[in-house]
Length: 125
Image (cartoon, rainbow, N blue to C red):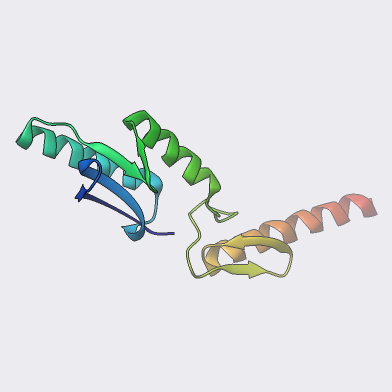
């Protein structure tokens, strides 16, 4: 999922920083960092604070931080390197896990192959 963060006018709340589900950011933590940068820049120019709108809900900064943590936990991640999975997903023949690249899938395959060989060797002793 990609996210966007921007300052905009809302009919109900006035100027806000909104987070939506289309944009250039992959990680919710990058979204949070951008939100904080926008907040600080806006406050230094206008001496006003902004409200934060996330998926239609007004939140405090602590609420946005909790959203970022919860959102990150909910995203599918590569079993090998924990990168957030995007459109391209890879697999290998020894696992049902998902990977972000062929390199990660191959690394997992090699790890599982070695583990199976060690277990087979121990069994045969």
